[in-house]
Image (cartoon, rainbow, N blue to C red; front, side, top):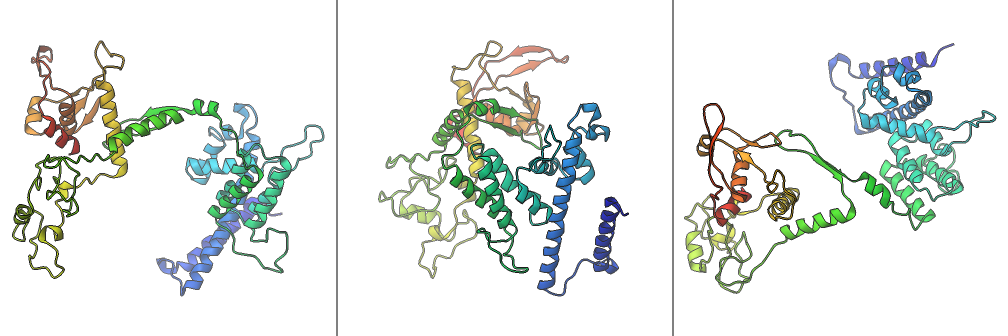
Length: 444
């Protein structure tokens, strides 16, 4: 009698032979037409779904044999920490894929009656059959079962009814229970379509939804700062709603564009392409740096950015067929635009909020002083723009730009060391940059 292992090895050998004959001569797979390529993809999809069903069934056996003391667990005796770790090493998948198989095995598992020893019906018998029959992938199976398990207010009868409807939909059969005839099936749904249907079913069965779990949210709240990696420090966490709302308010206030209608003050709305809709005969500055184009009349502006000027790049023909004036046809200077992404802007706004909080005086002191960020750099490196700076406490090795930002936002204190590294003198803190220079450094 042939064992299951031998049969699976025969399947593996047949698949290897089929792929080997298709790649005969060491070349890549080549197909004569689109129809053949589509057929191959469809067959591979069926094979993959059947493998998913088989792996979930075997994973259920592994999980069941792990329901004992640690030393006697199947995964422990195999040299692994748990069932997911065993799958990672045997299937050569990542941790997420291994946990998905374990989660699916939990939904497939059938409990045993403690008195008679008979296996009780599973939570999702129809979906389990669809998974074993190759109609569902493990992703599609989880898309159906996970939301239903989370919907705790849905009863057993409704859950089994939803299981039957989803299984027919997954198999390409009509939802009303009718038959399409011999061999007749609709196209199988995607995982997204299955998720949309289960969301609709849950909304019909439980229109009010589950009660919010404030206590669970308080348990999950955390904020973790990682280690320096490739020039940045990763952060992750979950915020309570009121904390997230407060942070969003701070970021919105810092990213809110401020328009000042002060004629001739040179501080109007930034425009990167001149416009005639202002009505005041003046153009706003191109940026916070040198103020090019700020307060110029139309004639002076056209003279400065005429076709003979190369400040915007290549010369622009003054006799254009489209009738546009030269300064309107030419692209704006690249350094005049804010090229940061939305995520980068939020990062910079968050950094500003931290600096304001540290300088507010309302934070607890640290070592008898305000929680001050200290970035150290040698005077020689700072003057010659060489070397690196160091963030004290964290020990981060950062570019000199970080020292520029620290000097811009705070102050600079000169500390002298002797040849043994002992401090021999300390100067007073002083600022090196004015307000305009500080804005330019922050935006750099």
